[in-house]
Length: 321
Image (cartoon, rainbow, N blue to C red; front, side):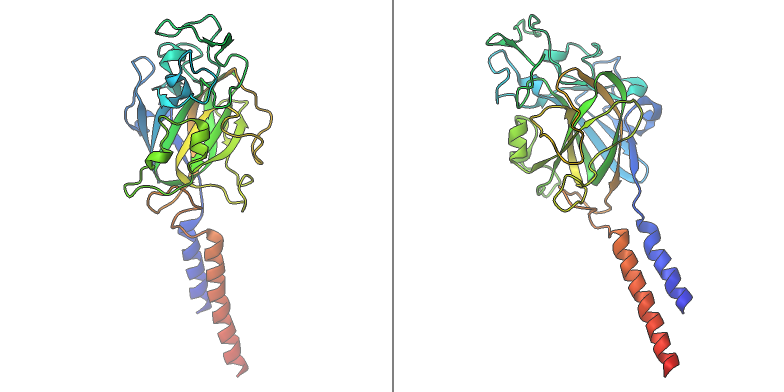
């Protein structure tokens, strides 16, 4: 009978061993792109959807605070997210282009996720010079909510605990900022209007159920960078969410988070995201949580060990009698 309980213990633990799943976002595994799969050679798209074995689908939508800027609101709290253009650049991965700041698809290095803005004398597509009060947009200063930060809204079909991110291209630096949505979702799994990305600044998102996960500095391409390690939460548990906002670094997202990197600097950050990895929940959509409806392996181990101990104790008692 003891063998039966040992077998039951192994059975309980086997399906629930936590393991990371990787979503490849480059052409080396382009078969995973389900729709919106636009390469850099074309006009780009607003979003792309990716699949991976054993995990939920991932939709990546391009957004940028540079999309809503004018010469009148540069460097102010009016810097809010607007839609941008996403394109896949071969094995390098995904890059974001905000028309007012980054030029056309493929403009180097502005075709990447960036926060660098433009030179003082440059003009946007409307011929408006990028200055406000004699100060150029984001060339040397971080303007709080920041006026030219490219980002990707990573939306998973189920809650995912992100663990790693990789970039396939770096020009200058690759400093990133990460937020996760931790509030309740609508019945259809979407984010409530008050917390939706478009038309919101970083400060507004942080005031409406978005949590700062950390700032991270990535020094090498195609090398997994550990993120969301739990050091930044009060209970030491990594955040799990269906919605993640990954952007070029800005202090507007947050600063000095335990578990992140302190060696991050604003400006001159250009990178393309080639993959993300994480542990997926088998439950439904979720704004936040640990692992959804999947029990933690340690909890199952305690349950199984308790059952085994109870059986052995009964056997010992029977022998003593």
